[in-house]
Length: 234
Image (cartoon, rainbow, N blue to C red; front, side, top):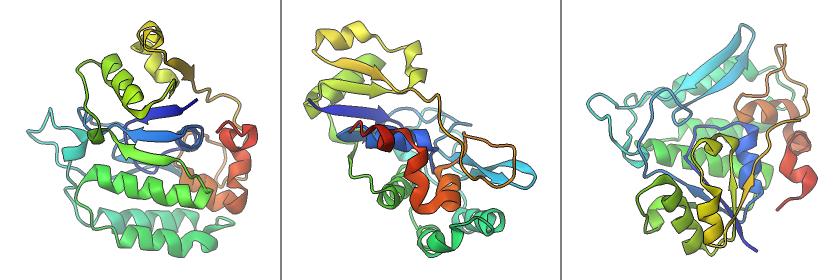
């Protein structure tokens, strides 16, 4: 049995994204599809004393309405310094910030990539190391793809030799399970309900923030507040 997931590369994603990564044998970053503005590709939320705050990577979009995620370029080369200052300002009081400060500081300040997809990959890979997630990560560009949302996903599954496809719940709007079934692929749905709360700064508690919030607040205990580690689904 081989299980995979296929999701667009997001910027410092929330804990549910990393649970999906940890629950599969291979995780495919789908970056040769159209880039969507005001989405999770180039931004995410952190906690602050004044409420939630967006950290957004500025990207080139003018006149590029149909560009693919893999072709999206950063428009401000100082974005990394600005984001890091915001993180320091809002998380310096977190219990485990000092433990991970140097790691994230190097990750941000040494980031010279100009393509958004590569930036997201670098951060996802680094956070996987912190969480000790060993899943293989690949890009969709490695595969021969077909037209159509379902057909594209099925083809990746087939080329990976996967017979189980793990999907986020938002795909229920378009995913045709019968098409997968005809190819001998079982669709499983990720359940994001029932996450336990952790010691988070600045109440009220908010689940839907970047994974860095969990890491800075809970450190080595972070995986105790994630689903894939408790259930040992991998």
